[in-house]
Length: 185
Image (spheres, one colour):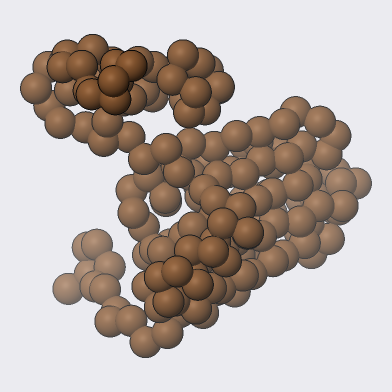
């Protein structure tokens, strides 16, 4: 849900919401927009919870930097506290045909995930169009997709999106029951 307004005595003030920079969560325009949408949905009686871990961030440098979810340090802490094995997979832009064609082979991507459940905890990208690439991971986290849910998605070749495809395919999850694909009989 959008961030609820809390009074000085620590109590939630009913029907008052606080979005954007004022709540101190994420000082990003797209985060404020998502919080505003969530607030309106709740005001209209349609419960909505915004997963702040699914909000991507990007630095428009050269190379670009983007991330979504938690840091590796936070993921390691979560794994230790919750008792699950942490998966870390990395790939390089050096193996990506589109990046090489653009003469932008310097770059890398990393995914942190729960090896028991396949839950994606975080994705970090440094490289060409990192700010555009992060959305597939962001949407996967927002919709609670696991590595198993997305590792068989097809990515056009040659495209930069194959960098994420390589991450997903490199992830190994402990015995998890297979899902029947949508449309399969």
